[in-house]
Length: 301
Ligand code: SF4
Image 1 (cartoon, protein in one colour):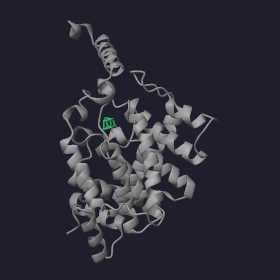
Image 2: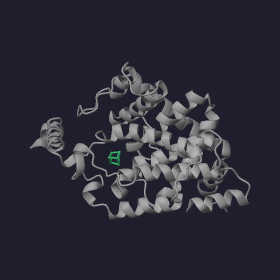
Image 3: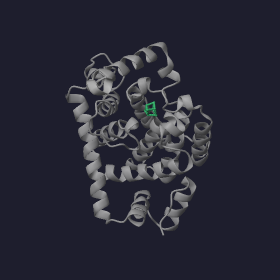
Image 4: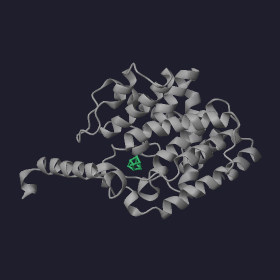
């Protein structure tokens, strides 16, 4: 019987009692719940990481304009801007998170980890972490397993879906996965890893889901960049042994409580927040007209 990922305190007790690492316990869960051999699962995760790396490259090298026009090669503009308020590493982190998410908004291939709306955060953070610390792909794969365990618990106790818990559930959960993975990859202990998750959740709590015109473009793309930076800052804080004070399981409970009390107009319905602004409404009408114009004549009558 493997651990069922119902709480972070339970996960820590389980790995300590069974002398497992965090990634080993997630692998064990995957094998028990879904079948498959260890090597097969690891090579599947490696393939997913290759897709993440490709999405970063594609977003930085190819034309990235979405059909609505709201997304227009933003990652390349940030990457190539000589005027910067960030360190070169940080500028690349932001650009990569934007790049992978722009690929999603332009209907390209991404890994929905944990969702398509948040698909720039793990690629941006992990590709940057790998470059800064010269990590092997195998180390990143273990980090992704840790991220998967974190997501399983958040899904169990709160949600990973914007339609259920707002954007905190999507970009917030992806950032929590990324910060835990970063701390793991840099040799942090379990308390530091879970503390990073707690700090990240604290920074992302309450974020609503308000996509303009119902498209996963604005504010989704820029939120992937800000969530990637929060993942990095949370990992740095946790690695310095600064406590989140509120334990990680209670942070996840708070996320669930906030998500369930959030009004439905803030949960992917495109009826509140940025989607309900004057400009948001105008864009929404324009996108609707575009959609009608491309319908075959028979469907327009
Ligand atoms: S605003 Fe909504 S659709 Fe966009 S990333 Fe956040 S949760 Fe996903």
